[in-house]
Image (cartoon, rainbow, N blue to C red; front, top):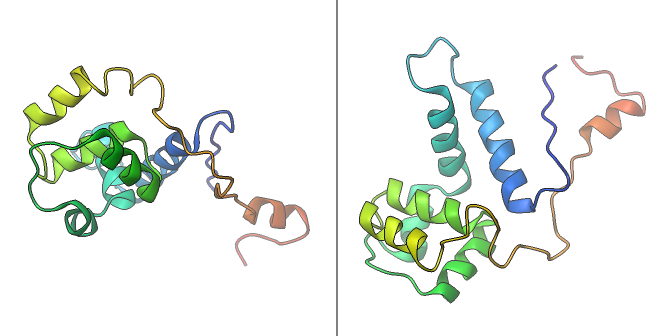
Amino acid sequence: MPVVVVNGDHNIERRRMTLAHELAHRVIDPKSPVDGEKTAMRFAGAFLLPAAHLEEAVGRRRHSFGYRELMELKHIYRVSAAAMLVRMEQVGIISHSTMIHVFGTTGRGWRKEESLPIKDGTAETANRFETGLRGYVFGR
């Protein structure tokens, strides 16, 4: 049985994206002609930030976002601010140039260090593996 392990030292935003990314590798046919890594990242973004839900939350088209609004959205969806921007560009809510502008100004350091990381104590915890250690036999 495949197992995905994430680094507990990483923030919850990164762990969630990593888990969704690895799920994509399990469901996308490895013989598919698509770029596996790019497709897995796109899948992770769509899984965590569904286009219809995101458009309902922020609108179909935006030219800018305030810092506070982005941080609120990031906490609602429990993803990084960088992932939020990339996904909004993918679904056409913001233009590529708007995304680049934010990454070059307000979000300059977001790819290395998370802005206002989620630390609310409600992080997801996996327990199936622990259940297996207590006698559950997988595959029955």
